[in-house]
Image (cartoon, rainbow, N blue to C red; front, side, top):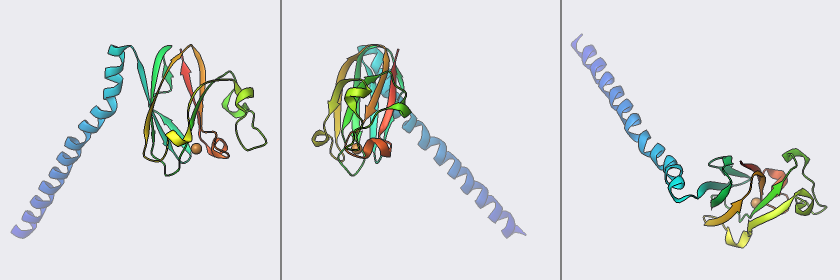
Length: 158
Ligand SMILES: [Cu+2]
């Protein structure tokens, strides 16, 4: 009987310790993801963290106010990728393609800036600063096939 109670107590203590482990581990991670957003307004520049993977772009935010925007672009993929920034009025599923398996940038809208693939190899971070007016901006990788594979997203500037 005593042994059973001991076992129960030990298990209860163990699960309590596990819970404490969870709750003490989580807050620092949230703090690091929040900190760029906290720092940005003071300097007047809005920072958008862009994570590049096979085959996607992940933005830390999908809306920014007009003005100076700083893209901090990290390629977490294994391949080199590029990032084209294009102002467009077209919906993402109506974008024109070329015969060469790429987005037809000239027909899609107006190219604003780019980071080329040789500057954005695997495990590289590159910063791009631009001044953006209100509108819809397409972020794509235009290496043949990558746009169709999912490397496209929209940033809205208001
Ligand atoms: Cu790519």
